[in-house]
Image (cartoon, rainbow, N blue to C red; front, top):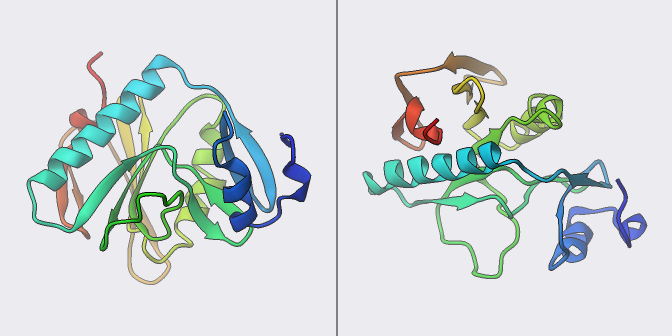
Length: 185
């Protein structure tokens, strides 16, 4: 979907300026603005549970990392920026007025029927184009499973599907229970 003023947007920098303060949810894909659909209660509850689980796991460490909820974009290249459902980045604290997170370490996407193919295709491949991304967690709230994509050696991406047990997210050095990523049924 192209929004009002979208035709003039071609780069991530222009997109960030265009999207700031604008109602709705948008991403930039190959220079085109894409409107994101509204979210159901299960989706939002799962995003929130994942954010809490990651925050608690980080709280048990002394890592210089932070969890951020959806609402910020992750620039992939000059023409593409995605908005994950949650992320973890490490290092210096971002400026309070920042709207983009350039070097996330962990990305979280919650599947929904309308975005499943994008989350597991275009966005997954895009995220792993960033050298900083070590893990991408795709949460299936209906099945209460996690598809954990992890950067391996070279350009290898390892995938594990988990419905129970713990996930080891190293780097940066977090461990969290799969069940903690989901809202109570």
